[in-house]
Image (tube, rainbow, N blue to C red; front, side, top):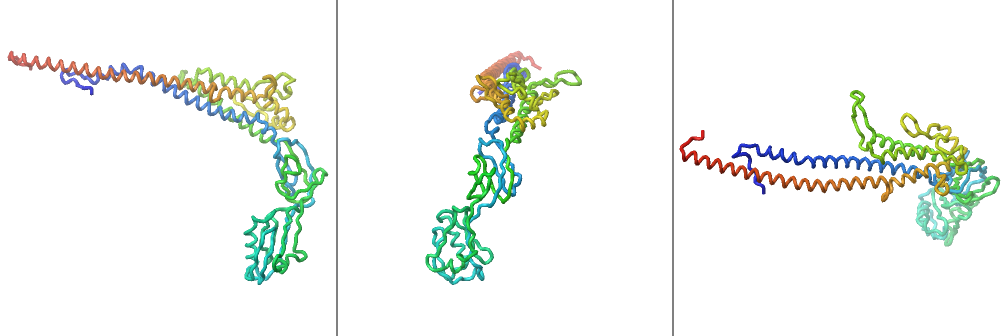
Length: 458
């Protein structure tokens, strides 16, 4: 433990003197701490850029994906007849004239109307519904029988059969439409079904398949909904009878939305880079008022330049790309000169290009090219994003690693300097303690001498 003696003997302000000496020795420590604080801020800025770049990369990648450009929409001129969706990737733009003669219907039986749905029927026996045996007691009512049938619905052979009450009649309906799902009911012991009138004329609705024509070709289906067997890659939902026109087309709205998402994320990244590399000058004093954290950083500047260069590139080789659609400007996407902001500068031009020259626009965006040449704009852009953000070898990743390494090295230096400063403080207190002891001894000796000589020290 260090003994700290103030200026009791010397009357010196020992603590202030030592603190001044320590402050002088602390200058390198303060400088390193300031340097690490600045590095930490730079690391945070590059982390922000890395995160924003990942979003930008994802949005750019979507514009190179085959799935994006192969998505189709289906439009029906009369959705009271049918609607649907394109689920396949090989469907082309086409128009179908569809006439629905009849919808698929479920097989149904109903009993004669009884006096009540809850009164005892006085019937007993057994009957089967799609292989399941239903036992009836004399105390059972229509409601009781309905419950018994529904309790074995899941165990029936083939399609299930659901029992319900309509008025005072018990109705049995196949859970699935179409002639393949005709139910089988039969009395096995007694005459419960017969007594209730299930086999009377007019009490059966036969199962039907859907019948329609598609471009004058007759088609049929056992179901009205989620029908995937009529046209490859298309799912139909039939809701009525009559004639309608169905059109399949490229999903240009989805592509346009993805373009807008990319532009937003691109402008966000570039705006942040601009802010971090800018130098602000005071309008009143003509002096620098603020310097961005990454001002003078070559990588930050290179990213800004390279990104814009890729997005403004023009492919002038007609064997690689249609020259009417060889750059983003020709499809209505460009930059506002006043603030370097990317935007859809001509929405009408973009809509027209997507509507009438879809394949050419797709090539501009995602073409693979050959031998490294003729690649689409966004395929080139995503390649550059990979170089920047790869978690192992990306340029931004390396920059963050280098900053981390610098901070770690500085922390080691700081630990050594702080240890040396602590030792120095101990030495100072020891020296001043020795000095105070010596002064005290001198003062004591002087007092003795003066006392022996009878001399007053006042």
